[in-house]
Image (cartoon, rainbow, N blue to C red):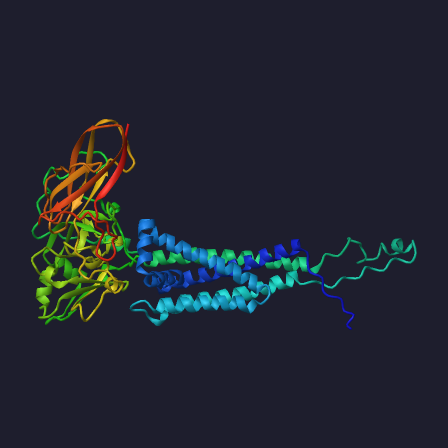
Length: 553
């Protein structure tokens, strides 16, 4: 039987600090990896950043129902929530990897290598990806693996049990200490400090240094990227020509003077944005071009200057998102300016049999629009400006499509670079592949904006007001009712045209104290009354009457 004694386990209070240190090394390695990826992405493009590439791939792989939940729950903050979730997940995995590395460092390195491979796959899976796009993920994986191996080695050295140092022999005579006191090198300084303390300090400094370097590389990379790919100056230098045939000023009386009612024209800063782009494409108009090809006799290639030399048209138009819930905020009205899309298609010579126009964005998004409506006489545009200024980057600078009568997912290609005349049988665009209706015609909708939901209003006469739209058909009537009573006709504001929303108002006379439910419905210019049955936005747009509850005091 062996006489060797089992190694005693360290007390819990000793194991907890070591676990915390191991977790910290994992976080430090993750910070170094992310920072390295950010720094390299500053030279390969913002969309090649490993975190953004993985996030974009996650958006593409997310089931439609979950996407709709994200839009419904987080609204336009869905992208920050997604990125925050990715960073939190990475932090948790880094902590777990650090704990594994305390026993087997190679496991931690394997986690970062896997992270790098996922980033490579995500970067190369994007439309139009080049081999260089994988560089940030490769560097991030290598830096993370190397950092974790180094920190794990230092931490292991710092926490490894040390052999006990035997005490110095006692002097044999009382006079010996005095006799040797004057000899050089024999000064007494107390007990010797264990070597492990120095190693522990080294591990701590190295961990903090990795965190700091990762942060510096990350923020530095973002700063360099913002500077390298900034197009603010290029956008500011664009001079949009005036329209060849300006629209008249919008008629007076479009907007009832009711406090709390949306403005008739939506300011650019308040215009809704719903898309899948985690990083906004930054396109210098001097390098932009648009290709029109497919089932055409004469393919076209236009530069931005070519586009601006064409006769430009204006369009007053209400655009809405198919993800808008009943009474939701994802709708806005603006005056667009751009070149005639039908004129360019006729110039290219559309061939018989074509029934779909597919717009492709710089970031690879594809939007399919039914071709017949584009050519039926409505004013469809290749827009370059909204509300009198060049398109904001978030809304498609330098060029986007606008086709009245359709939700954005089948009519509004932002950051447009390619138009393919094709058929529905030959190509299925992004949203249709995910189960959405292939036409995407706007349904009639109306909402109550005043009073606000759950507002408290005084008894007596109460002003009701809101907005209704049925793009490219127009609104003929709006009705409201209280507590399921008879429908009452609302007063419509002036009509700006079938492509614009109409605002409405009505005085609710004799409102009595208590809680009341107000409902609204619209009738479009074709005589179709807004459907009562509630349906979710998927797959063809929400239906149902909007209602709000107020308390009369």
